[in-house]
Length: 343
Picture 1 (cartoon, rainbow, N blue to C red):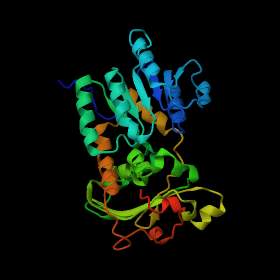
Picture 2 (cartoon, rainbow, N blue to C red):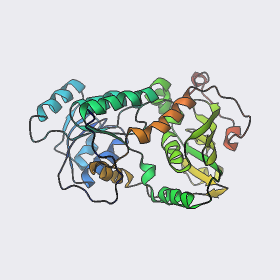
Picture 3 (tube, one colour):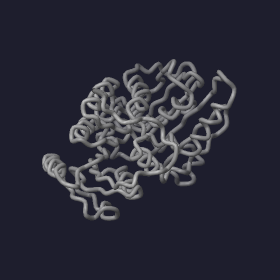
Picture 4 (cartoon, one colour):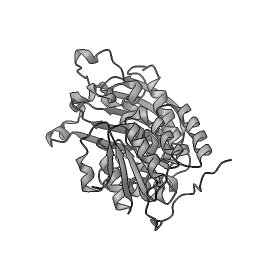
């Protein structure tokens, strides 16, 4: 029997008065602090946290009384003990490496809590099907953080496209360069079986946003797939998209380098830049507001971008032919140990 709760969209910012208890897995990761902040700003409590690394002093800024564990077994036992008290966990927030999401989501649901997971929700489309079965078995939900869908500029763009010319095919360039140092290639992020590669690591939220606005995928071509960059072409129902993703600082435009900036984010539609550089600071809090009101984004919303990233990861690049992103022409230098590794 399907015991899932109502999935209708949120219509306002009204939150329930009940305070919820949270657990957090992956407390030492850089994204975890956004979740701590969101739990705090929505009037809830972080009761327990887990990470194999103990550099988690940031917890004191939000929840100094939270219990902390470096071993999963002790964390699991603690969550079980809390299940028989008034501190029973209502939500488990998951900020772990991508390949662990599936397991940690299952843990949360089977511990009778809802799960809140960073993107990518999982790495493979069939994982989505399996998690849907666990949702139905447990009656608990999992929610994916798809914060670009809550960005005011992106919402305005969606409304503009909706009001625009019917059946119009828009020409779009997506460029995202977020510089990473040598540490990146020594971490799990550079292991494709653990991260899903660059398209998954840094591109999946953009793919989700574009599908949300311009419709489902009709064609997916990969031009370049390398350790530091990937590029390709997506044909959606209402858009032709050239995309370029990179973690290489040398790929940054000269004007960005001259400002000392290490990130470049650009979306142009019909040659016109869409401005969405600001407005990111409270998007996790907005996501938590919706989730606590049981109106967050779940498996159905997460699936299309997972399918895109999976297809990119398993495609053979065609090279610089057809309609490719101009940034793909730039030459990239690699250390010898990276030359034969493709992401």
